Length: 337
Image 1 (cartoon, rainbow, N blue to C red):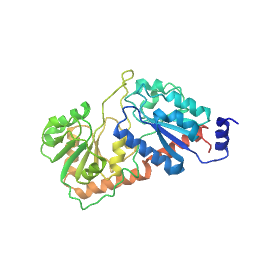
Image 2 (cartoon, one colour):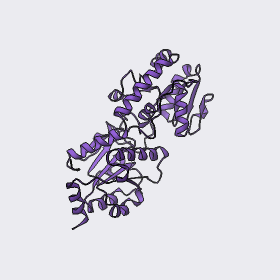
Image 3 (cartoon, one colour):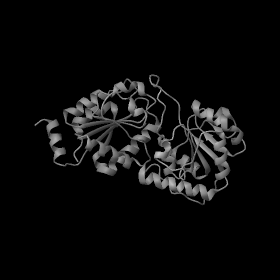
Image 4 (cartoon, rainbow, N blue to C red):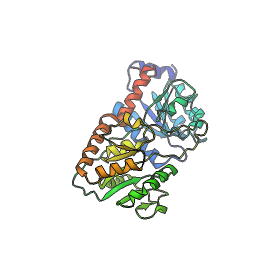
């Protein structure tokens, strides 16, 4: 009996699923490595840690025959030309495994999606608007999320809030423009804006890179945490797709107990959080109103943070996302029910 028929029969017999998670392009960032670990935790919630294994994309094809997964789940970026997803899918099909790709960098690389469109049984995109631009069937929206293990932190009310406004992230052009617009207000506050490219702004700004443990500590000591989208598009010139779905930091910060104020270009945040969990602003007047309402009302900020954290843990962890993906795969006949 061929390996493919054997695997198909084991799935039909209800054998536990075995998931091979593969990622790790040549230039994978630390943030993407953390997302990979978080996604593995989501699969482990569903099928147990012993049935989930991660391999680097460069060794994935060779690992498939040996590990005999029932699902090959590729994640991350499809941009690097040196990442051969086609080879991985060919080996997976030989043993009857279902192949899935979760594009966690959409829509910033959308012009390069031809590298995966013909290979996988199903594709999930982290961006609601961007998922419409794949020229194939079986493409679904699946937002990123937070990890129970990596991102959750209890909200501790005894911490003194010594930082008025915190932002941590790379100084992309769009973020710089927003911050420049807010500067008349920010100059009168105790701010900490951290990340590559911010140092040139002066006092309160730093080019430092922050580790996760440091970031959680900063959240605890901050009254307001700015949430600003990114604008670095690598391959997104054909349709100029505007990002719509909130990025993973929104869910991660909420899980860590931060009180966020979200700069919005779209209204999609409201699919995930209410105005009583994460308030929004789109201009300086809105921002000033939020500062006036919340900056000296720590109990209200903590109450809002608790609501956002509860929402995240109840609806927006990687366990929730993987269960959503499994439901789609079952509905499409790509996984046994």
